[in-house]
Length: 348
Image: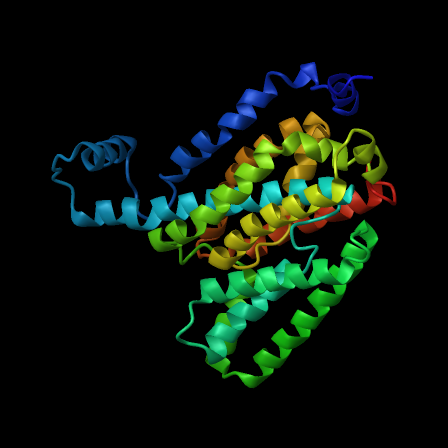
């Protein structure tokens, strides 16, 4: 059998019945973005918004008070863009990890990434005031993932079960270190640590977007370009070898790319729970398991999902709630549903 025939055999066909939904889901970020620009305690009409945006692009002056420009370009716009970036990063990373682990109950935090990031942020807040919280969280998140992969690798092979167990161990170690830091710090520093761990977009800024975007683009680009190979990995190592693909090499590539994207998101927004779990699984239930479709949809729908949740977090209750709290409240019942409906072993 030729390689092209073998490739077609192992790649699932796109569901023709979903052809109308596919472009709608791809365009969701545009709707979420422009509608969210109007949400907030400071009212700005569509005409004023269009005029302000056009004045910034074309360079002409307007007679609006300066607060209008500040609200749009320094508060809402960076927050919306950061929410889209974080949501897309966590969702596409979750889809990639679920394909690698062949289990839809996997999230981007399975390898200890969130625990390492939380420890790094706490260390910066408590004892290293000269070190950026963002850089400390990013560094220790990658340290946690690296330790997990190193512990799970033996004889040039990295079994899935070993990766999961190593991730549990590394997460437990960093959680214990985080507890020690929380005990040793002042009450004010402890409040900052707890708030960061909850996950929030309230401190969004252009500098955070600029610093996180290179790794976000790099990780997402790699996963997007190689997305069909996730279909092969999801079938198992033996099937991958039968078509001439080295599964260990591609596991490393996808784990590194997904970890870079997820780490950049956690570093700028804190630990936002369950986005990387529920978004890919929702899309898989609607469009099927084909990663050629699932990966781009995870980018667009993940970005839209977090923007909408953040809209509710900052305006729905009359006071701002960390977005990580809302995603957990939404995701926990959904996760319970998955546990009851997905078979043990997890991959349908």
